[in-house]
Amino acid sequence: MVHPAALCSPPHSQHAPDVIESRVARKDCSSFRHRLRLPQYGLGVALWAAAITVAATPVSPDSHSDTAPDSMFTFGGFGTLGVVHSDQSLADFTATRSEASGAGYTHAWSASVDSLIGGQASAQFTSQFSATLQIISQQNADSSFTPHVERANIKYQLTPDFALHLGRSALSVFLLTDSRVIGFANPWVRPPVELYNIISLTSSDGVGFSYRFLIAGGTNTVDGSAGHASEKFPRGDESNTSTATADEQLSLIDTYQRGATTVRLTYGQTHVTIASLTPLFEGFRQFGPQGIAIADRYDLSGRIVLFYGLGAAYEPGDWFLMAEWGHVDTHSALGEKAGWYVSSGHRFGLATPYATYAQTTSKTNITDPGLDLAALPPSSAAAAAALNAGLRAAFAVIADTTISLGARFDVARNIDLKLQADRTRLGPHSQGWLINAQPGFEKGSSYNLLSASVDFVF
Amino acid sequence: LSVHEHILRAFAAALFALGMTLGGEAALADVVAVVSAKSAITSLTADQVADIFLGRVSRFPNGLLAVPIDLRDGAPERDRFYARIAGKSPAQVKAYWSKIIFTGRGQPPKAVSSDIDMKKLIAANLTAIGYIDASMLDSTVRALE
Image 1 (cartoon, rainbow over the protein chains, first blue to last red):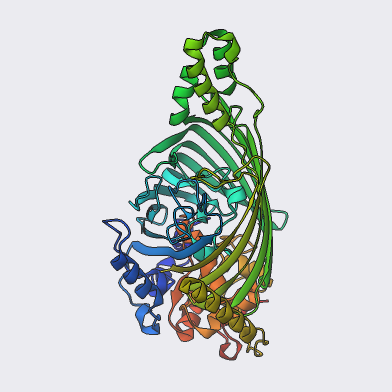
Image 2 (image 1 turned 90 degrees about the vertical axis):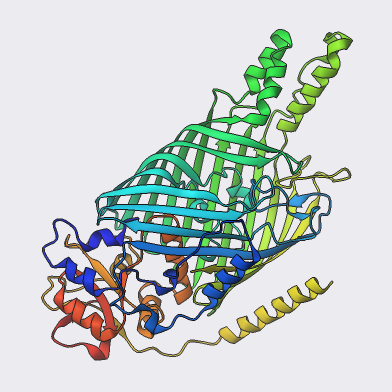
């Protein structure tokens, strides 16, 4: 997307664009203009109260006169306050793979699954040169709400249709990946985890470009990026996290948009390292040729993780139909995963009821027995058995199917209320995307969620 | 559980709201897209106007740069304009720009505070495109479509 501000004073424009600059309010949507104080001490009640007060304040026409002082800075924010109930009391449902705990086992009703708050500051230094900083506070892998920097980049707009960026930028592998946390921008309580969890990275540190051109009566945008990213995952006990890093990450995303139709194709590749798996494969390498063969076959190190995605949306206004599919092959113990969903909704005035069907499937070598314990001396068989157990855990099959029914209600210009009910059936031998499974948890069972959330932007 | 009760009540309230909003929308006066009377642009389709205002294209079909101008957030003409050209409700327009802004891909059009300012600005700038109530048309601006 091109920054419209860049259009206002193009070097080759013949007609007094500075008249527009001086006469038009610098920041268009007044409700995006409220100044945001970023959270300094995590997610506090006071911050929430302030954010909701700001979001709920009716915007008076006087608050945005066109004589407002011209500033190169724009500030804005977004947030969600949501609760989720799960009837599966022996495992936790979480909205992303980075959250330490969720609804079900840890809390029957959890407010820390969907709730988050984010703020963004942008600076337009010249018509071509801009910078963006975005900070988000949401539940982390260590259970804290310590804010993290989601984006911090500079962008140079060579032409209205060609931009280069440097720094931490959005990675839009799926249609809603880059706006996954902006509840107000999405039709549902949360994008289906069945697809959005298979590639959970939302940003990447590096360089990229965006180029768009007109073709076949529509607009085609090509986004390319190269960089690296890292993400912390919970390990089951709240004090422990594991870091996954994606190095030498390359992605090419093509988005074609015409009228109400959007189609996106994504290709990505990267080298992934998961810190907590490294000792496992080092362990196998101690066990001679058989152990080395197992490590070589299943270790992530040095392997290319390949990703493909395809998505389409039709949004003529009163209704929408969206479908997306994605596939990731890790060429390692983690196997292959695919996810897809189809969702449709219809707007009746302020209410937009919707239905979604979503599924994750995965393929791993779960039947691989690992090291042959019978061939080992009793002294080392116990260590080998522990390694085999670790390998089986890495093989975990993630498969489930979810049907969701819900509705979005636009209760104010910048606030919505969403209610959603989900029924998830886990695949055979799978705990799906649930975490913190307790003794007695039954793989392949079903569970139900009830969610209510309020989203706002300011 | 009292929380259950609250959720049930919220669902009930939501269903009520749904019923209330199922009624049709009142007939609307026309808001038309306009450019300067001196502009070379004589007509655009609703889709072409929507593409310009939603930041999907940066130029008119003849290759000239297009700078969309909005009325202030909350102006009834603005809501009617987006309903007509893109079928979007005010919340849908806000949701659309939330996605663009918070993914760092752009900013919405600049806004003026009144339709009088809008008309003056459009009349004086060949690159600008805006919208006004059809009753305000005069010789300084040209209605498109």
